[in-house]
Length: 160
Image (cartoon, rainbow, N blue to C red; front, top):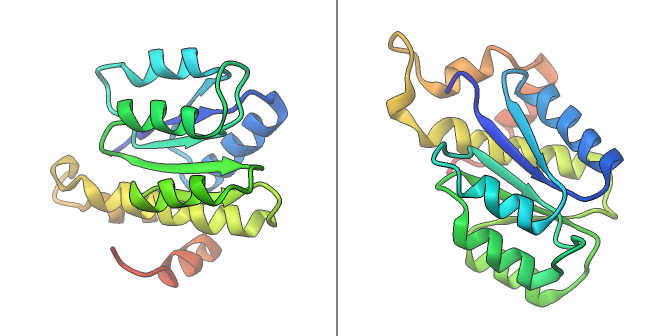
């Protein structure tokens, strides 16, 4: 997967940029796209090209909470999904768990987000064996771009 497409659904520009910087620090070849509303996100999710990872804030100008979550889940491709939210709602966390979606509360330190992001990228790099290049696995291709610290964190994650 030479250029995995990452969709960042976030209505605050500074937060969206920070998420993109974090993604690209972990996976420099990632192509980040942005949606600042649910309507824009749904249009992008309907694209025929698959999304390797969808990062979504649940509080958007045109949708909130579980409504946002359910709408994005219905259209997301087979890639990973990670919810970033300031909401502390057990129903949302249960919905994430039931749909194999990671949840990170925005109030937590950035290293928690980075660990969740690395876990999601780990899933992305392992899920697509048909996208090998010259006999290399997607994981090996992605690991070449990670720093030694990022590889150390990734090595500590449980295997799916």
